[in-house]
Image (cartoon, rainbow, N blue to C red; front, side, top):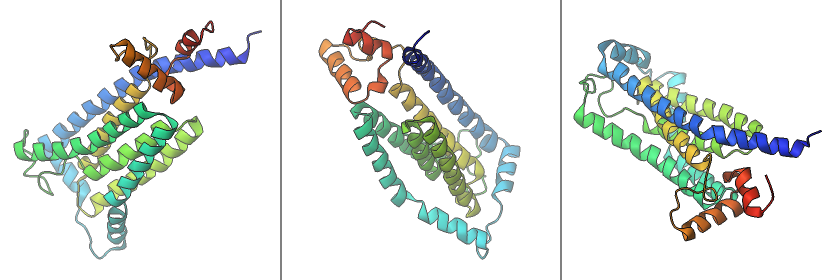
Length: 259
């Protein structure tokens, strides 16, 4: 009768080897959807009409507008910055320097690229639809939506158990949806801007997760390190600070224990 321990280790290693290609595929799919959304919602007259219809006219005296305005003000950058700092600190303490650096790059890249895309698309207007939108040009994608979704996905990626990951995903989805709808209600963004921000964040965090969870790693789990010294440093960091980064077989080979 086979002991449950090795069976669990083999199953965990198999899941780890399958994670990276799935995450890469997810990032590419999100990027493709983002491009298609821009073409459909801004590059076509019918798409702009539907997007503008969903936007509607804000009722500044209604309770829904007041609640939406409070949500937009309450969950701004003054909340996002401390949450991002807390996530990075948690990843540094629990997962190691490599994970923290990847997380900083992913969150920062998502926020910076959202701003870059807005400015670039507004100035170039490649499909000729920016200037005829209901709220004008320079709003695609939403920076607030990108930021909140990047934080939610980063928290989900850092969760250690399936139960906590599902709970964070459910709570984060509700918060992100509420903030996105609030921006549409107060007419600071159109629906396509919000969805685009979510997709852009998914591109960055899925890519970061693929880097954090490599599969089939060689040279003690770090193929990117060319010199023996860098390989040794990468191995020590990944083994001591974040052992989950290293495949089980690599740990067994390094420790001398037969797989």
